[in-house]
Length: 270
Image 1 (spheres, rainbow, N blue to C red):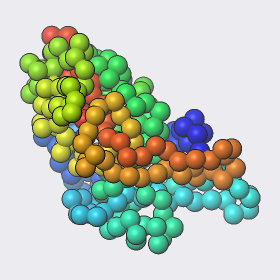
Image 2 (image 1 turned 30 degrees about the vertical axis):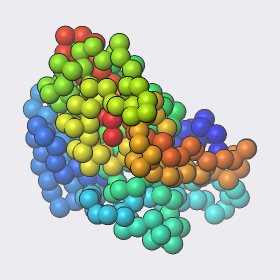
Image 3 (image 1 turned 90 degrees about the vertical axis):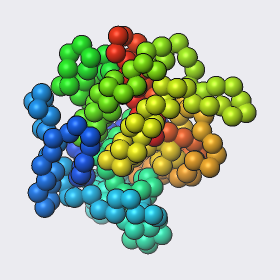
């Protein structure tokens, strides 16, 4: 597995099929099999299914189920699905590939994994999309996050994260671009903007998004305590890929973002 080869397959996935249950300031409606996120000032309307299962359950994981064309030897998957499973052991017993710890969410798709893998630091992109939200509104920010490569449901969640950071952390984040992510060792405290974002947005983003860098075993540019690092590998689903290896594991979270204008925002730190 190389990052490029891994990403090429994963970015074929263009939709997420995981349900959203709740988010502060989101107007939402729920049916038995789907939940539609609706923003009163937005034309975006995203329906995802099936309902999110095992959310908050200890030991639960989100796993990929790959489907192969058996008539073609050593082929890449022709399709895949992702589902929440009660435990890593249960997922592996079913032949599934665990993609992150915790139940699946709107950022659990292979497409979103590829973006996290290829971009250990999304600060510049998050800042750009935060400014788009401030200057042009919700729809422009969603489009901006989609242009980064995130699936539509995940892009919507990132935009709500930016909006809530703008509302609750703007005072601490206005000068974030000029500061490092962490203070001096050995404690390496989080920057105040990132700490505010983690308190105000972290649990909601992780709960609805499903995937974070930390629970996916991916590296980021934020220093975290070793106790927060979950070990997980991402094997290449294409058997013929040259020089197979595993994605890096054991390091933390999604990179921060902060808009440097009059009302900055910060990306999820979970």
